[in-house]
Length: 193
Image (cartoon, rainbow, N blue to C red; front, side, top):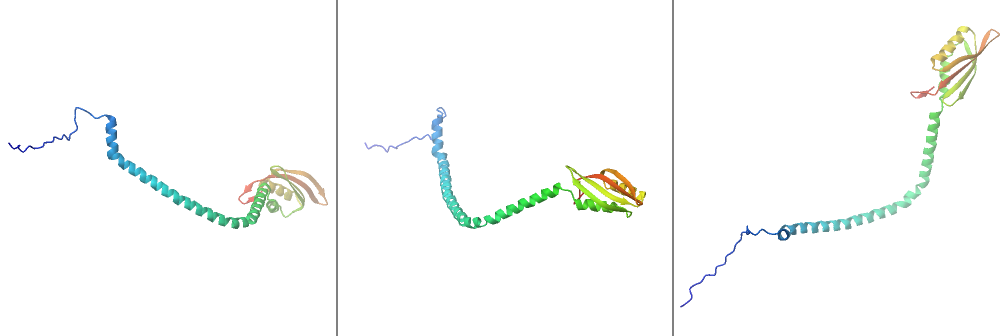
């Protein structure tokens, strides 16, 4: 008897068995074979990009070194100018510090002249710089007591400290006197007293 048409039956179970859970290494291996290859491709692309960038940066560095080496003779030729400029800057800073530490003598003399009445004739003025003040000694002659009084009052109004009448004498109808005072070095706007 001829054999009946027997069908070849294959049974496939595509569902994962629920009774037998997969172990962790098997899950990890499956993940590596499916998703891990994309990570591997991404890392390889990143390494290639870094490698290419390194070549470009090396070429840029070599170009910059060549440009710098070409500019070195020009920069060395300017060395004398740099030394001259540094010396000038040092001189200017020295002058500035000297001016900051010194008194403005013309301004002091102008202020004293502005406070001098017409009846007073100044014979001599001595200005001596002390640590933080200027000691002023004025020898003069006055025609009257009022002129002398106005002169001393004017010196006190200037802000001079220690205004004292050191000596007074009467010669040929004129009052000869010496006034001592001291001024602190103060900055008033651009002017100092």
